[in-house]
Amino acid sequence: MLNQAISEFYTETVSLIRANLPSRFFVMSAALIWLAVHAIYAHLQFRAFEGSEKALGWIVGWYELSPWFIAYIFHTIALYTFTKIIESKERPLGQRIILHTISMGLLLVANWLSSTGLFFVITQADFATFIPFLLKMLSTTIQLDFLICFGLLSMCLGLCFHDKRIQERLDFKNLQTALIDEQLKTLRTQLNPHFLFNALNTAVSLIRLKRDEEAVQALAELSSMLRKILEHKHDTGSKVKEEVAFIKNYLCIQQMRFSDKLDVKISVEENCLELEIPNMLLHPLVENAVQHGSQLESNRNLVDLKVSRNEDQLLVKLTNKVAENDQHKGFGIGVSNTKDRLAKLYKNYRLDLSANRDGFFETTLIIPISDANV
Image 1 (cartoon, rainbow, N blue to C red):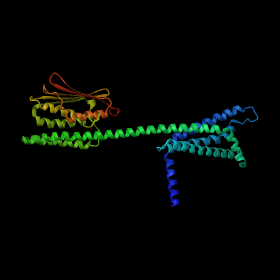
Image 2 (cartoon, rainbow, N blue to C red):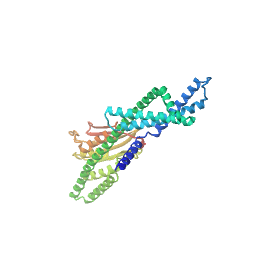
Image 3 (tube, one colour):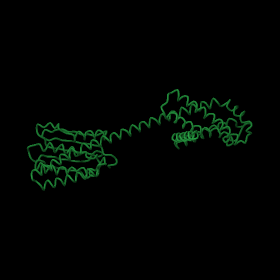
Image 4 (cartoon, rainbow, N blue to C red):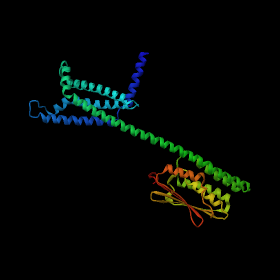
């Protein structure tokens, strides 16, 4: 049991350390910084003793000083790792201070022992004098070592805090993106049954009127629409030409239902056909226009759809005939969903719905064109 507990503790400790090891960039930066400090210190020592009895060559001085600076490279990496482990969990401030103090003290002791031991190895000194040499060295450098260690700890804490804030922002952004995706899926789910219900009603009306050939054609158009929905059920976007083809299927059905009440015109500029827009974005606007035009007593009521491009913007203008006393308030779920989708998808967009004096209603939609569409 004891061996198993020790084994589990060892495994968990190794996994924890590996998970909190610094990146290669951090390791390389720490190594380069300490090597630069090492070179500067060796140069200053060389100039200070130049011409005296204690003078050493620059290379010899650099070589003999290397154990302490090499030790500080590993000291920095280990201190950052321990700091990340301590800061990775929510702990009381007092507990964190104690843990940081213990880790800093252990690393300082390890630093002193390893750097002094490495110095004795490269200089081939007598290890019998190891303890006196270490104590003599600490009597002159211990304050500087503590200051360096406190500085390194402050840097590590700052980096940990910075990384934590970045991770929190990324987590929040990912959560926000996932939420928006789910909301868009919900809006599209609400949208599809809405227009399918109207299209099926059209087919039923044609059958009741004994207009069998038109009913078959209406069902064929509806079948084509359903196929396009299934093909793009997992897509958030589709090309303008695909959206227009879908709208034409829908308008064909509606023209059968309302006979000569609708005068449909569609014009799309060539440079717009391959642009990608949100899936099922234009259809609710067209459907809204058709519903208002079909309620008029007159014939050949205009439903005019124009799609054009102005540099980095896609312009959609929809004109339809309305009754004189029609306040055009009955936009329905389709238009409200379109507004919700636009608000979630774009920071800058424009959707204006306004009535003209001549009995026409204009819907203007302007959305930005992303780099992927160019």
